[in-house]
Length: 67
Image (cartoon, helix red, strand yellow):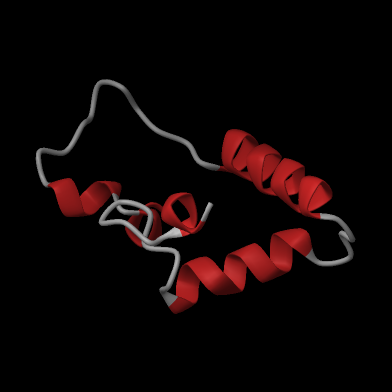
């Protein structure tokens, strides 16, 4: 399971901005499932994008940049 929980280029979960947001979104949640569901809904409901305005810079798609 550790293999699937590692930080990657795009999912830079070790950055302060990502960690702080994850703590905020999961505050008060008790189980891993509750936390995962809260994070899923936050991403689904809060991250907006415009399919007609895409960047060619891969760094723009890192979790820390999207937030």
